[in-house]
Amino acid sequence: MVSNQIEAPVRKLMGPGPLEIHPRVYQALTTPIIGYLDPAYLKILDQVGDQLRKVFQTRNRATNAAPGTGTSGMEACVANLIEPGDKILVCVHGYFGDRLRQMVERQEAEITLITEEWGRPIDPQKVEAAMKANSFKVITLVHAETSTGVLQPMDDIIKLADKYGVMIILDTVTSLGGVEVKMDEWGLAAAYSCSQKCIGCPPGLSPVSFSDRAVESVKNRKHPVRSWYLDISLLEKYWGSERVYHHTSSSTLNYALLEALRMIEEEGLQNRFDRHLENHRALVAGVEALGLEMLVSPEYRLPTLNTIRIPEGIDDMELRRYLLETFNLEIGGGLGALKGNVWRVGLMGHSSSAANVLFFLSAISRALALQGHKTDLAAGTDAAMSVLNA
Ligand SMILES: Cc1ncc(COP(=O)(O)O)c(C=O)c1O
Image (cartoon, rainbow, N blue to C red; front, top):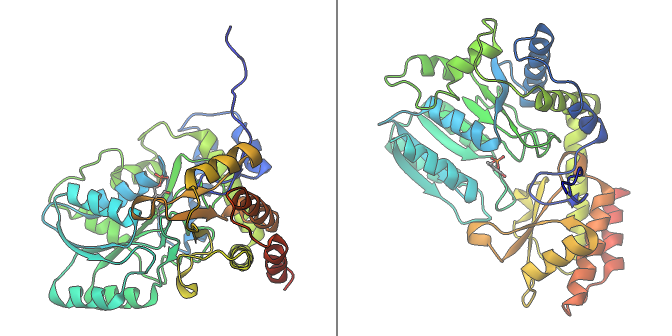
């Protein structure tokens, strides 16, 4: 007997992503699909491009949503801007910086690596020393490191890249739509993100933007781009005025993305950043009043992804299994070097709400108590409320 129902539970998603999505976005997913060259669909793709330009704060023509998840955007930026023998400055301060490093390596580029302890940002002094000593084509950097909860300060690095004429590839997977990203003002060459985090959609699309200078540099490559699928010159022929078939674009996902982007416009970018910051501050106040410790020092904390140190003696797997089974609550565990050391609590897009902050504090307090670690829940919720009421 074949079941006609898909057995997927409804979860409260407070991990690193995917996050909960708004009913309006679910509704958009049920819009009838149409062909990838239907004039009505091309109009929708144009609207997606226009809306993404607002979120990236850019006028870049080459801006739209690439097929695939955030990793696809990462691959697109790396494969287009980097070719064999290029000198590239790669910054790694977490799991995703290292994924970038692996991709750059596969392009057979000449890598200079800057590393930082996980939980700390990249030190601009190291960037300056490297740029003084070498002439780089590109620097790769993660703006919001989802593995550690660090928001990379951009000011110094932007100035250095400008001074030394180095193109910046920036990973904005956990920042775009939740934290300020100023593509043009920062002079970024290429940036990519994902649909499933702060933008508030299902996974499956990867917003990307390439500056005119970056697009020009792709035209002047010695070797063809090693990814046919993600070659920006070919994607541009579909997204731009030529309308040449490139791939069977998912109308379903683009409908959802457009609806989510419209919701961002309705809320207003600044209001949205303020909401993410306030809920983050409330969560931190609550967590600290429960006697738990954040991994990252206050000045570098990422408002969209909170990393909390796991207290000694707590069984991480057991606790997260309990949260999932008892409260239907998903939070993330540590990745790579932080595996078993931290919890990752996402407050992004529709999931960034006061209700979720309070729910998390109650659930974690109960889960800790079951393992003999007593916390003062009233103190935690009071501290969170004092931020939310402020
Ligand atoms: C900072 C960062 N970069 C890249 C990725 C890869 O994105 P995806 O899993 O959507 O392919 C992620 C995923 O969480 C991420 O957090």
